[in-house]
Length: 396
Ligand code: HMG
Image (cartoon, rainbow, N blue to C red; front, side):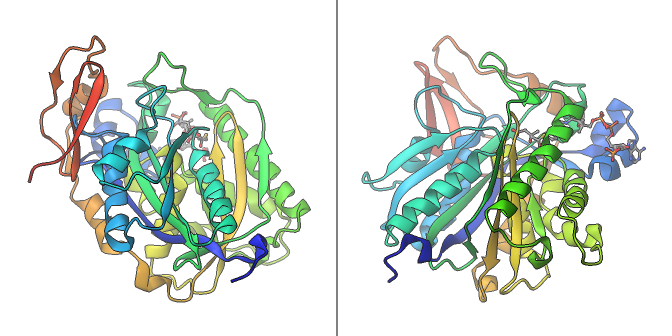
């Protein structure tokens, strides 16, 4: 075992995700907004968006995502759970504690919630890697769970979505070994934010696209200044995908910024394998880039031994560019079938149902309130009583 923490191989041992039981297609949305379907399908690169059922939230999705990881690896080595979200359900208590309880995990674990818009999961991942480097016998469970909601009839409406990603971070990982250095970029910008009194985000769409691309350039320059790999060494890049077309724009910008001397890759070919899940799930904020990674790993492309780039962006803004090398036997550890099932088994809702779900609110006066059983997932929000959220395993 190496004694220098920088020599310990650390990264993603297992990666999976869960989404909601319902979805709205962009075909159905276009019928009511009057937007050309091509704008949704090609202009922003989205075909459907996950919609939470009444008894689903960030906790139920995260527990759904994490359960198979615990079933496969056990919980003995897990000393930390880091839960990244910008859809917090409590100003004080970490959402991960409900997941810890639903999954019946042992008490000797620290559980913390992290926030910085969509970047939160990458902060969690980097902290997890540092913890494992300092003690390679430990594992960290990283959860990223969000529901992206914009105002009805706003330009952001077509870029909503919801999902949770779960990752087990360990030494000698079976999927992706993560590397240092990484490139960082922080800039105080009001491109997208959600004050505590709002359930939907406020956004300046055009400014947010520019801020994202500026942050990509800034993070890349920092990555290079710290001795990072040249662009040509990267097989492809998984980008944060608020809508999948953004990844194409980002890759084009990165090729220019990196001033690559290699013949330009076909951007469509390089990026398409990273977009298959996000184009039908929509923006899942903190989980989005990790769904892009899951899609890439699950794709037909053989990536054994290849190094890829990862670009995480969180409005406001903080960004990080980093790299990982795909393990030789990674295909033996994928969860492709489960991922496809999560997507294909969603029920498609009509526009009226979607609007009703969008505008509903939970009581805030502490009175007892029971939620209807709608989810197909393993866990559900059963109700609220005395201002406490009551979760349960969904009865079959
Ligand atoms: P919009 O203004 O309605 O759309 O909203 P548009 O007019 O800009 O059109 C979009 C694209 O469709 C354009 O392509 C059009 O040309 C094309 P582009 O020029 O950009 O390449 N188009 C068509 N294509 C084919 N056929 C047609 C057609 N018509 C138009 N007929 C906007 C777009 C993204 C602004 C909006 O959806 C929005 O505000 N979304 C939310 C904000 C967002 O996602 N920002 C992304 C960067 S910020 C980020 O990633 C962070 C975030 O995830 C939050 C966090 O960090 O927590 C959001």
